[in-house]
Image (cartoon, rainbow, N blue to C red; front, side, top):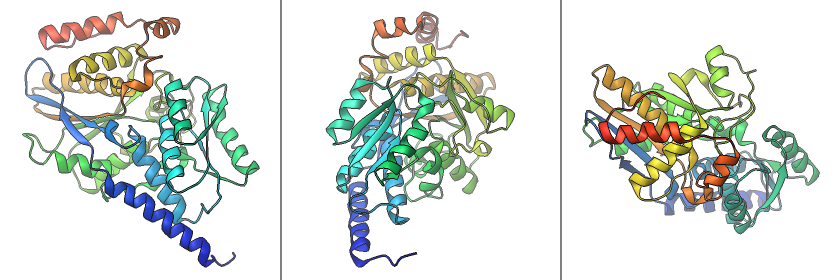
Length: 360
């Protein structure tokens, strides 16, 4: 292997400094109590990842992936960064690529929301579209090879790029912010999976610090994760998810099923209806994956109350809803997808009235 030149080492050092400086400038994300009807024996908290500089949970992942690639010597001056993404990771990676002066190409399904496409291009990235979600991997590898670039491969490296023992990861942040709450150790943390990196980080952290908190992963319809987890196989496949950023047509290498205590399938209609319901409660729009998370969290809370248990449940507000004005907030788009929101709207309306969430 050739000796690393002083110029290349100096470039890596400066790139790492810029990425670390960005983290230092960004305050931690907020933890909100979500006001809910009914008894107050179980409290729901939202970890608001939409306040990151690039507006989503994926900002954490992109920062970790860039540091991992830089510290491994995989990036150098002039490298083209290529990523396979359904949108939000690409937005965040485009930001970091611009920060260190590298070109960026996002390989994405053609169905990615135009709002995300516009953000990637605003940060200087280029969007390369494929017809199906399962095509992004090979196409990203091909593009990286053709331009002598680097394929970041979030779906492989997400679970290893973040230090799950601490270093201000999302799990450490949650527990630090919960310290003065009535129930500081959550009974459950509820997340959804895209790469699986967030659930791997949180689950490992829970085991490492021996917290009794249990981890539930909410999986949207069409995703392969739940079937693979239930049958303990990495071979499960599905058609893919309509909820951008979560759910995958295959079991991604970064999904670590051994740290997951339970999983729940969430219909797309439940995700979208709950997303809009949360928006009404917060007074600002949230994204579809937040709806997935909150619907699953409400099921967990119902279980706890049925068992006469009290405590706290934490889930994630993954991104803001302004990225989905032409999709999940559009009744025309929802209707064209054949999604019927009414059963879940009625259930949430009944919950508002009685504090009890009926079965759908």
